[in-house]
Length: 152
Image 1 (cartoon, rainbow, N blue to C red):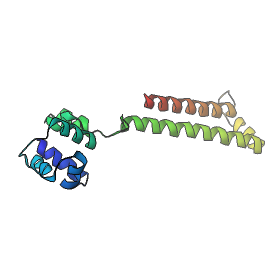
Image 2 (image 1 turned 135 degrees about the horizontal axis):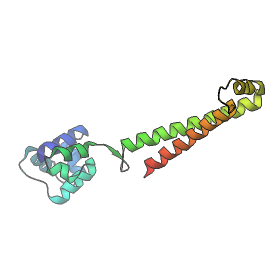
Image 3 (image 1 turned 180 degrees about the horizontal axis):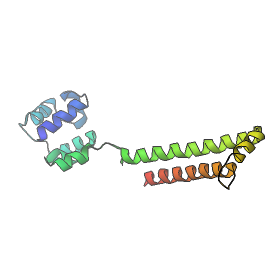
Image 4 (image 1 turned 90 degrees about the vertical axis):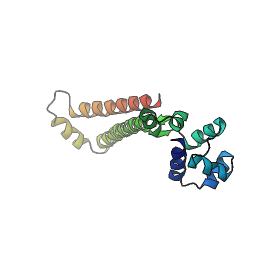
């Protein structure tokens, strides 16, 4: 019900009826009537409520479970947290690859014997230096693709 949704949204936000009334541009009594089911907000007030609480008009007006579920998926700047998780994973992967490349470069420059030991311990035909560098480069490329995919 619309009255329950307005009440729940207001309470979850920690607002008083007076505070919400000021935000929406109505009296506190209007909010009280809406929450009590005694009256219904005008369309422009419904739009203001939906914008303020970042919910759709469908959520406010319909009792469809699908509509509620879609509205409750939190968004940040129009993107769902799911895409932000992919971007975060991409950033972490990219940074890990870059850090690996930097560490390997420092080891190669500062301690050449350690670099050759790692190279000699490789069981694959490509020497250890090549394998590590390939893994780091792949990490950077994969991370960058995850970041770019998340920005769409």
